[in-house]
Structures are given as C-alpha cells and as structure tokens.
Length: 554
Image 1 (cartoon, helix red, strand yellow):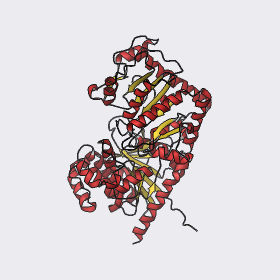
Image 2 (spheres, rainbow, N blue to C red):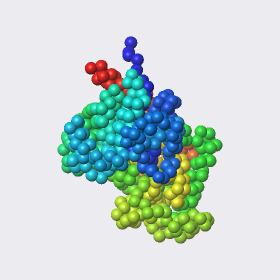
Image 3 (tube, rainbow, N blue to C red):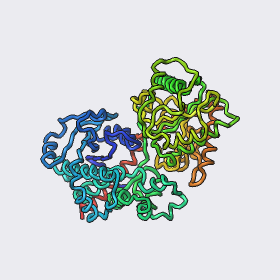
Image 4 (cartoon, helix red, strand yellow):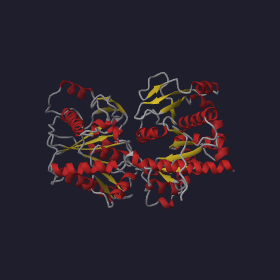
C-alpha cells in the first residue's frame, strides 16, 4: 500500500505579481487561489511587494484585524508589512511587504548569498536588485510569522515563483529548515534570453552550457540565483515538459514535479444567454473602433482574429502573425473580410485623441485617420517592430483590403481610453486566436481563448500546444478546437504559411461548423480547469514535505 500523501497545514506563496497585475504568473496565482482557498481555508497566505504605498491598490483590501499581535512584533523587528485580502475569487489572505529598507544592506546580503549558496550577484543590473530585495524581505516575513505564529510541529510549505523570489527561498532553506521549500520557474531566464536574442534554442539545447551562455548574454546574476535555487530547494518545479527539458539542460536540474497551469471557469459567463450577450457587445465594440480608425465598414460577417500577450516580437510569434496576415491579404481563396488584432502592451504614450473624438461622436466614417493601423500613440513609434512591419509591407488598411491589421499597444484593463473593456470582455468577441510562439513554456493566452470558446492556433513549442495534442490523442487540429503547428528553430516562414492557411480555412466554415469547433475548444479548456490540475500541486507539497522531514530528522 502506498504512503499517505503529506498535506501542508500552512502554505506561503511569494511572487512579484501578488496584487500586482503584470502577466501570466498573475493569472496562475489569481485563478488557482480559489481552489486552494476552498481546501485550506485561510491557511494559505500570499506574499507580495508593497508597490502602492500612499496610493490605493484596487487589488488589495487592507484589513488590520489579521494577526495584530504578530504585525506589532514584525514592526518591532523592522518589517514593514500590511495585511489584508487579494481582490480575486477566493479572497485569499495577503501580506504585502515594503522592501525599500533593505537596499542599504544589498552588498552584505549578496555576500551572504555567495558564501551560503554560491549565488553570483557581482554583475547584477536592472531589475535584479529590486526583485532580490523584495525576495529577501519576503523571506524575513515568513521567518517571523513562522517563529511567532506557527508551531514547529506544523507542516509548512513556502513556494517561490520565478527568479525574482529565489533569494528569499534560499534564505528560508538556510534559516528556517523546518519549512519545506518549493521553487517554480515559469520560464528559465537564460532560455528566454537565448530565444529572445535570436539564437536557435531547441536544436542546440543539448549543447548549451547555461552558465557559459549567461556570461555571453550578460545574465549571470539572474541565472545564478535561479540555478542555485533549483538545486537547493526541497522541490523544484516548472510548468510543462517543454520547459522541463530546458531546465535539465540549462540549469542542470530535472524538475521534481511538473505543475501545468490551469484556469478557473468563474471568468467565463455561465449561461448561454449571458455568454451570447457578452460576445455581441465585444464584437460590436471591436468593429466600432476598427471602423472609426480605418474609415471602413465592418459587417458582422467579419472574421476577427487576435493575438495577445507579452511584447516579445520573436518569442511570442508576433513576427509570424504579421507574416501570416500579409500572406492572407493576397490569398485568392479568402471568402470573408478579416480583421486581425495585435493586442500587446508597448511603450504607449496614450490613446489617440482623434480616435477618441470619433468614438464619442459615433456614427460611421468613410475616410481613415492618419496611420490607421494603431489605436494609441507610442513613444518612439519609429522604433516599434510591429509598426515597422506594417509600414514597410504597405499594409495601410485601405478600404478595399480584405485583411486589415490593427495594433492595440496597451494593457486592456477597461481604462485604456479606446476600447474601455477588460481583456476578457474583448477576447470573447474573437472568432479565432493565434499564438505562433517560438518560446512559450506554457501558454496562458491560448488556454484563456479556448476557455472563452475561441478556437486558436498555437505551436508544438508551447507547453499548452503539447498538452492539447496529448489530450486529444493526436496532433491537435482546428476541428479539435486548437490547431498545433509544428515549429522548430528554422521554419518561421512555414509556420506563417500554415497559420494563414488556417485562417483561410476557418473563414470558409459555415456557422454550424464554426459553432462545433467553438464547442470543442470549450470542452478542451474544461480539461485544464484547476479542479483537474490542482493534484499536481499536492504532489509537489508531498515531495517537499518529505524532503524537509528527512532533513529535520537528521
């Protein structure tokens, strides 16, 4: 009979994105919180950076009634903390910590990290210092809470996310050995850097030395702290088998547990009537903005195709998306008008006032605005790669063009000045989504799309794409709800050609076929709900707690 799985009595999780909405890790934590909160009932505490001192943080509801004796004790220890709840489903407990006081100790802290674990911070630059001071402060918070509030007999887990939290995880490992430590890398810093610098990552993965490449790409500090955390925590995890292979080669450590990213159905309208209403509203707003910008009429027959995510031009396949748009423009088999949206935050200056004025006035327009390919003004637009592609390829969104491409270079939080709808409230209006990524450890954007019944195209280099094919039992196709295109280091043009073909193919679907594909996308997404994926976290907790028990018995 197998041993009974060990379950923690208390869980701490730290991340730069706790109450700080930035990217995919925020989605991981904020959607999973409800599932864990239901299981652990306020025995789960998230720790994040207090970046909103003196300002109201809409994601954080401060509540001083939590642990008043401890917060007083922590203040006496020099810790500046605020307690409350995270304004997300599940309303989990949060401790935000001010890490600014630790900058004065930076050199000493880096010296100790070198002595204790061989972490090389000598060549640190950019966001390394800020992240490390937060990470250290989070470690102090956990140590103080554990010593003052929890019995040493309690089974306690500390999970740290991404290289930004590694210093704190190592601190806990040394100074509070009773706590079981987990480190989750969502993408190795050096792997992302290799891919982002245009080097072939996959064919030569076996030959790369992570530490050598870190020196070449000026990534020594981030790589060093990440590598040492992977080797020294009780349980090292990542989000997909794709990234697991990367960790084994670049960090010289095979992950102990794979933690695929799930989703929470609460974000999706639950009734067909509510879903249909939200979809109609989203489509109407997208087409209204497109019409006001380009001076063209967009009928409801328009096929809306979108991509989104972090602005990593090559890694996220934005270059391939644009190439596919250009190919589709000249495809004689295209039977419907296509509107393609690139929704990636860039160095945005603000919303276009001329576009805002047209949207305020309402009505239809027959003349385009200047440069009718972008919804917001950018700082240094001449340096922007998306605009450079559109301009150099003569893609001006002419009235007669069957394919129009619009760049939405802002964070869609409902207050962007143009769409005035949050990302999910626009996503539901898309007909097809495309994420032809080159570097994509998991791929939340395609999972989010399928959760909203939007079929999507992704690649075999994304963790989600590999999972989708595994789930359907063959190379996933558009009819399954997700098309997975085989991608390698060198076939970007072929991927663009196949994406263009998928768009043309989808545009030819009748309503019955399109609705069936949409349903299949939704069914696939249901397999990735947190209620199905959370078991992997319990595996990681068990793994880490057993390692900690063995250490503490000795």
